[in-house]
Image (tube, rainbow, N blue to C red; front, side):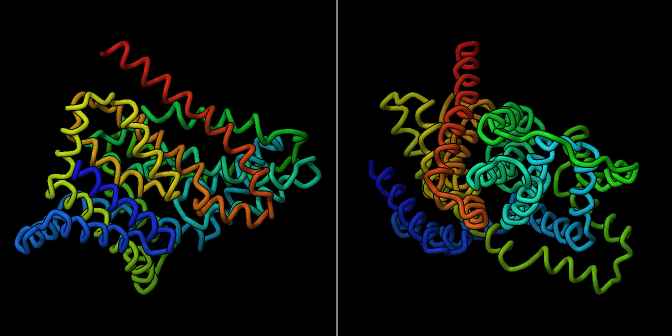
Length: 399
């Protein structure tokens, strides 16, 4: 019980600091310091924990992946590739329903926090002449930005989940695929009213412009089909693009500095320190033993911890980095269990009032908060049916 009270106190402090707009890296570092104090860890043990967190293979892989994701986003943005992709989608798809949802889907392929605001004007432009309320447009932009986060290996939450659980990226993506498909289908029930018609036909230029999607296609093929580790694929892609666009040495250094900025380093150090501290303190093992001794079913544990963290923080890395380590010594867990926990946490993130994408989207469209939630809440409830059914069926087939 001491461990549960202590870790709960740590979670409360984390939530308060996140609500105060502290950087996640600082929040996780502060949480680690509190755990050091609660468990009266000696200076030598603290030093060993910090050292282990810094030099870990996971820290290196996550740092490289996040840094080069930022570099990829910068290169595509500065070379107008995103705009070319948008025009290509309009010219090829033409159907206004498809184009309307493709805008946030397209921008959502890049894990940029401000990306939701970037796709807002695209949705607004695509919705001209259609019988859509501000809440309809806001929901479309918000909802269709997010199916990728469960399956696209560019997203740090998914990367961290595979590193913690040791479930391969390919397997996690396959298991999460049904969640993404469900999100895309469910969204049609809440944002397609009055949407009909087509955009003007454009010549072959649109098809040629589809070549702008090649960086994403190549990355996905390398990671999912050939099993190349994400950080290797990203490094290769970024340097290929810099060569293709004939970047000078000075420009290359600028891109590298943008990727390896202070916030990325702080984020990774904070995440790895918190994970290592939880492990070294013994809190994870003690809490798991408590659950086992009282025969608490796995399903409520796998659902509640990530869901509550997700809804309170609105941040995928937060629920993965704080809840998933607590699962690691529970008996009977497998890849399906971690996939279910990811879906539960992500449902919380989608419902969170502090989710940055929701805040930015509502602000742009000046949408009524409750009017927007009247769409989001039932959509999330429908979404949760898929992971719950999959988990129950799997546990029934493999007790």
